[in-house]
Length: 373
Image 1 (cartoon, rainbow, N blue to C red):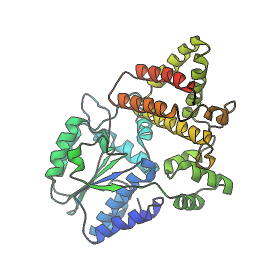
Image 2: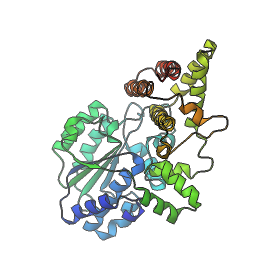
Image 3: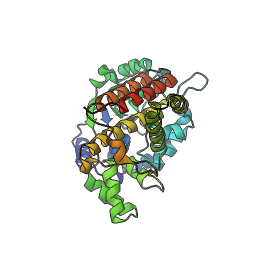
Image 4: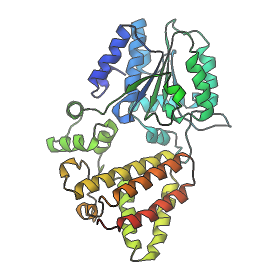
């Protein structure tokens, strides 16, 4: 990954390059932020810069992610009761070379593991200890990139903490995570935090203009709706991107919730709706919750006349966004968002998803009918 292939982030790129030039490289760093902001691309470009400063001939190896001193760890599912990265390394390379901005949902689809929970296991940390006990193949630094470091289970995290505290010589560790919430505080305290901000509209606009054919009005719409996230921009540039699975399920949820008050028999439809979503993998369910939370917030902004802040609407046939937004107001928005947050909390802790979604679906029907006064 070259620096100029990264969308925006000019200030951060400069800071990272300067840290290498001045030899002020922290042995353990945590790049945090949504995947679409460029956390993994920045980590890859950073690793490449370190290697080519030591040996300019190593550039091609790093670009193809097969440099012998560049190591990766990432969440996987267990095979024969063993959770190791190695059997899935080629899949990870292929996905990352195609889209270095890939997120957890992309990874689940790559592994065809939509119904499996992907985790970084203690087996993987044991394997890392063995690898890094050896000398580097090219006589210089060894770099470890831990992608989705927040997916370590507690056993792996405790073992990794010891790895951080007593790092092998000439080892540079770069953790990549969406957020720090699920990372042990003791690990956080031993890493240098690099917060990756959203991509600026100017940088996003310029990158799309140079690399993709879009009409001027379409370009502005993509920049506005993507909110500094390159993954979101890519989805918006795909054909029929406006009609997404999440959008259709959100519409179905809202419609059934409105009907329940008048016709209790529609409660059965909400139960079936919840069971359908419960069949997804956990990451996809959590992503849908984030989508729902976003749409409710935007609906409230629409209701209170802040149209300039509504960067995304539902324009699906038969769904009247403006009419729906009138039902989202100060008297119910906090309750709705609280329920979504609690559902996310319970899913993260392996609660029964059928119960979580059924409960959430039923509660929404009550909040939607709440009077704004």
